[in-house]
Image 1 (cartoon, rainbow, N blue to C red):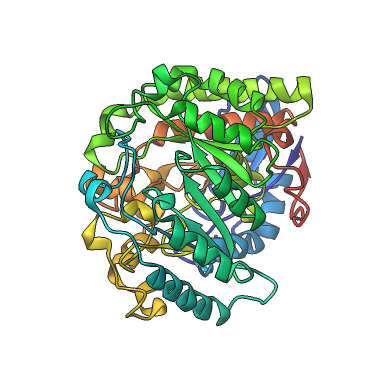
Image 2 (image 1 turned 45 degrees about the horizontal axis):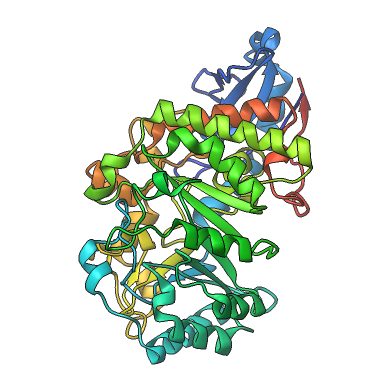
Length: 473
């Protein structure tokens, strides 16, 4: 089995280049049991360097002249510099624009306060166009011409402010790459025709195969079901490659994840997210699933996705898990920035509220202390360096216990800072799903040991990657 690498850095410095593993003068290699009959993982936590080692050869790894240790030391500086850039050297390339605070659904676990969803304001068309003009100027100052920044219309429910959103897409369709996250209840034929014409990425939300389960957490304000409406939209988008489906995993649906994967595959969904419920606000916390139990259901669902792929030749990429695999095999190729420390909030993306207020991430909208300025009045560069943003961008696993002692801390990142702050008491605390992440990483390493990881990743994910170190053990 070939060893591959991922790397990061502690305290912005390269790791020691000493010769003796686990002596305090070199790489502190740790063994991680991945429940595999033939292999265990060896991880150097400060750099997230890892290797899969045959169990009967583990003792040799810790000898001072071992091939693994010596080759790691020879390449450690490069590993450190690569992840240093990923963790601390990125500039924003995406913005979540919230064109309204209102929503026509009353999802039990929503991270936006109920009063805003009931009575909040829309962003006017003029304000939205001015916002995009400001963002264009900002991105033009450093982004290469051939690369388009991303604008994701997020929510609450952006299609409640459809006229403003569609006007913005028409005017700036050649400037930005647009996406929209919608509950699909307002996604009629005219809207689908418009969005697909402009190649807008479309994300839908549905939490169950049946309305009986889905309606426990996702309904309209009057309690009526929206399940069939969303299913109808999924069927209309069946052949559109730029759409995905988000399923929020709660205590109400976790035991049906395998059925949900089968359902998504049957509907020919190209990619989905099986996201653990965010516990930022108190209303979501009763729906937090038991971590060990939900990990078992989650892994069973992934196993079913693999069986379906083998049987049909068609993948259903579970994007949040694919991101965990990439955090191990190719950290700079990851597509989502939640599973790293610092996370992407305020660093690779930020969020704009309907009144122009700027937040590190949409998850913080509704938390006034993280309002760092206004896009129509303040310099974006100044906002990115403001105290509310720095609270998020300076949150590192090295400063969080017990994360700073965890071997897999750079495959996880102790997300989410909004959850940690609101649920657990501050930025120096872990997020909500520590044990769940541990199970995910162990499973990902088992798949890599068996050579199955590509079945869970987007086709062509490695077109622009190169192997830095390949060690046969």
